[in-house]
Length: 352
Ligand SMILES: Cc1ncc(COP(=O)(O)O)c(C=O)c1O
Image 1 (cartoon, rainbow, N blue to C red):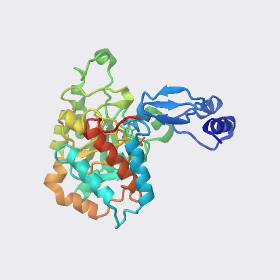
Image 2 (image 1 turned 180 degrees about the vertical axis):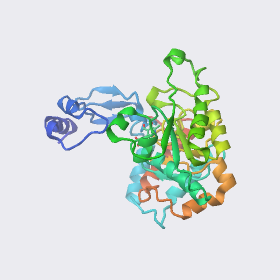
Image 3 (image 1 turned 30 degrees about the horizontal axis):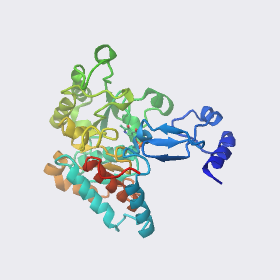
Image 4 (image 1 turned 30 degrees about the vertical axis):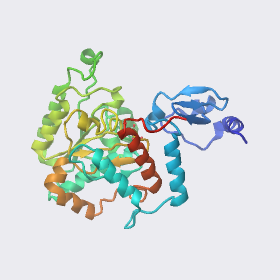
């Protein structure tokens, strides 16, 4: 059956399909499906052969473009050599090679990489690492997590809880106890037509101090924000906003997590962390921009330099975070090829 016939057959029986689509109006889609048959470069192709520009790079999953020959080649080669090896007490070279390569590209101080399978897993891993970090330092009372209203940190328990999407809270509840939120920074009256970083909004980072005083700073484990607020339609941080969070976290001993699912490799090779030079103590992740697996840069200047032993202890204590599919052979080679592509100024992969 060719792709067109296959798509037509699927489309005809879609109304009864078992596939529960994420973030989609299922019934509506299944009544009027929009299926793609193949992709190449910046285009998708419908089963009838109509070319459609992929304006969001596959929702930021394929930023190097679709079916790039070198990436296809890397996957094919790896599948034929060793398609999978478990990472528990065992290993394969690709994950080690790629982690080291990535650490070299990362902003100074980010020296450990933990691989996950999605941005959501990266966020939950980062939150868990922050809790583990405090616990191994004898500050297990630090359990409170601070997010931001309207923030999006994926679909897992932790990420949904620190996220500030009211629709999620309506349907799932708070999910995790002890979570509070900074106010959101989407202020159309002041920032609607900002070019670059908006002038207003840095003062909203003062909310952190207010929340610290409300809850007692010694209970705060971590503060997590998207440096560029995706769910607010890509609101950039006002100059000083991230810095104030950084200072507040440093003053009160909380871990600052940047969720860089959107910004990693995009606003700069090292993400917002590098672009605005406001080091977070623990990086969220750098996934979609690479189009491969998600990566928790499980380290930060403060943790790594000051408390290296503690992070290693946390890891030795087996921070159990999405381990079986962490750094799989195929994802490591894909992302390695992609990293090379981005690192070399996106020139070394010839177009077909
Ligand atoms: C900032 C941010 N965090 C987390 C996620 C979740 O990533 P994933 O969909 O890969 O689980 C996203 C997804 O768009 C995101 O934008």
